[in-house]
Length: 320
Image (cartoon, rainbow, N blue to C red; front, side, top):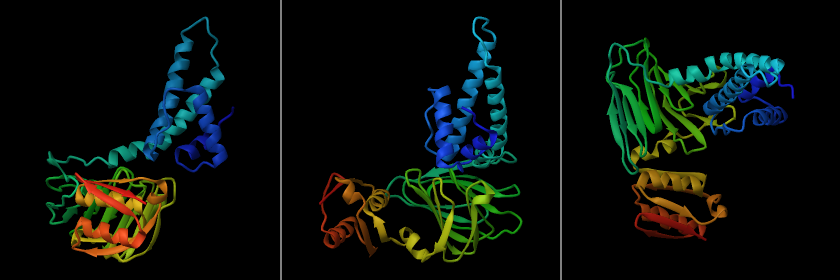
């Protein structure tokens, strides 16, 4: 099976056609049964590199084995493809690994804070910026910003109120998204177990998207950027206060699947939510709650949808 360099480039960057993707993955499986496909984009690049590395090692071993014939043409094609991947990974995966690590400059001390489910935490940075962390979130940042940029890393959800500094952009990295501002207020939700990363701007201007600059959008007040796995970043107009409801002790649901609402309830109220059928998980619900407790929300959802629920030992079970 002949795989071209351009096909490998498209596959590694997530732009293969369905037919190309199938051909390349078939080829990879034929030549390596060890490395499993990775679930994320960064992991996909690493997986592709690992597969090629293993093949190269296997064929290198054959060179030293006189009783076996070496397919030098195949080895050459592997090397050529590996070389092209070095370029891709050099500007993609390796850059991603570099920029998503908060740099230590001039012996700056790195700090890391996290919240448990049901907790919120406000962090004030050395430049006067403040960040409110939602439940089950983590923030990594330098004790003092002393470089040409202000860089932090987020896992989970945070509301950012960034001090303006034209000389030093403020950058927020997550495991797969990039955000750059000069001074603004925005909410960034980037939980590892969510299907989307969502950026909502309350004030100012934000550049948001993947580390590849070709898939980034500029957002202004009242705009929301959404990044799905293997889909182009998109934007739309929203009410910012809906995305930032958790900072005001509100709980806003707008046409969301019950499964998504369950995750939000788990993070907000430190409970576990079990839904007993896929049909219920896909059920779309809506509601707005201000200073409401968990039972108020569940009673309202039960009334409006006809579901039944029980709460026992911090576990909610939802049934028809």
